Image (cartoon, rainbow, N blue to C red; front, side):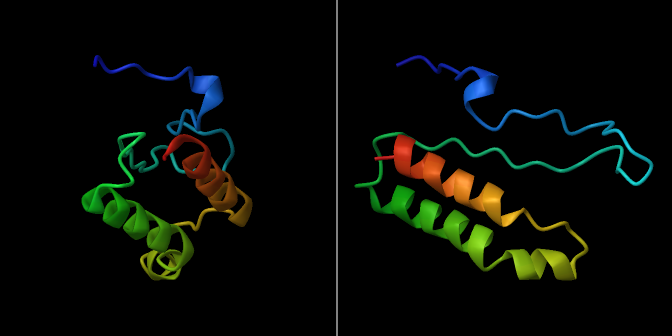
Length: 88
């Protein structure tokens, strides 16, 4: 099956370089993860998703220690809702 990208408006598309504002960083770091939509029965996929869920819920405190900005709770909820809708 060929790879098909979803339209940016349907996901979490955002330009993260040269953000406006005097306190904005010129470059931000982003992580992209590709997961099979129908792979949750696979143990590896389940484990990977469990790790990302941990990172969003528990790991943000560790990120703050390293001076990374935590994700807003509303965004974490949005990401988890997206997983629930599209990953089976």
